[in-house]
Length: 101
Image (cartoon, rainbow, N blue to C red; front, side, top):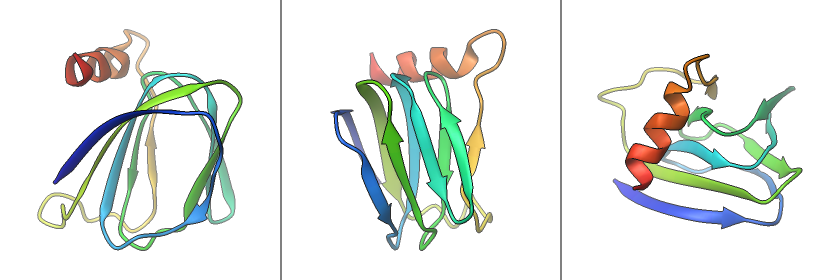
């Protein structure tokens, strides 16, 4: 498993890789592109991307995200990217802050 926090200023073109990717948005706004779909993303959103799923993103503001990647086949069985929106209570944002701090 790998973990990193980074600030993104440029868009990420459509790509794929052979590992799971978990992206937790800390700040900023953008759009996640998957095959045939667009998802608005922002603080508190959690994105789960399975291996070999094509995805990319464009940002409307400076964006800070937490990346966790690795082989999570023993946990996840989905085959398409999953976007989890923050709750009304801000629990996704609280999770991001807990991981980040």
